[in-house]
Structures are given as structure tokens and as C-alpha cells.
Image 1 (cartoon, rainbow, N blue to C red):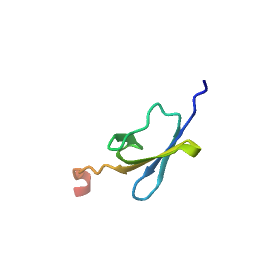
Image 2 (cartoon, helix red, strand yellow; image 1 turned 45 degrees about the vertical axis):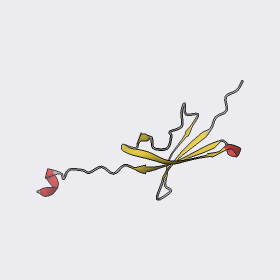
Image 3 (spheres, rainbow, N blue to C red; image 1 turned 30 degrees about the horizontal axis):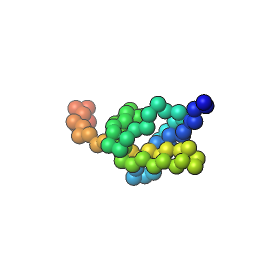
Image 4 (spheres, rainbow, N blue to C red; image 1 turned 135 degrees about the vertical axis):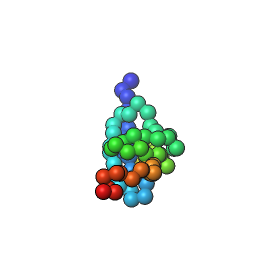
Length: 75
């Protein structure tokens, strides 16, 4: 039996910026799950399945981390 390939499209939640497109992922991230992408940590906020075109849109927001001030910027 041939395996159907779904297109997984990742979007940034607020700006709707396209982040990355995958095919045939072994799993789809769930709402609330954290994903490491483009050297940043993201949290999944919404998942939409479009069965007609075999597409899954995953909306994420970047996890804001409090960064310590660089000593070099204080100089």
C-alpha cells in the first residue's frame, strides 16, 4: 500500500511568516509542544489540517527568553 505524503508547513503565528516546509514527517507537533527551529525555541499554538490538499499548517510563536545583558554591550 503506497504511503501518502502530507506537506507540513510551519508558520510564525503573529506575522504569518513562512518558516519552513517539510514532507512526510514521522510526526506532527501538537499544540503546546516546543520545537527547535532556526536556532530558536518555538511553541506550537495552532494546527490546521487541510485534507483536500494533504497539507498540515502548524502555527508557532517564538518563546521569549530573558537574556542577560552582554558585558560587551555595557563597555
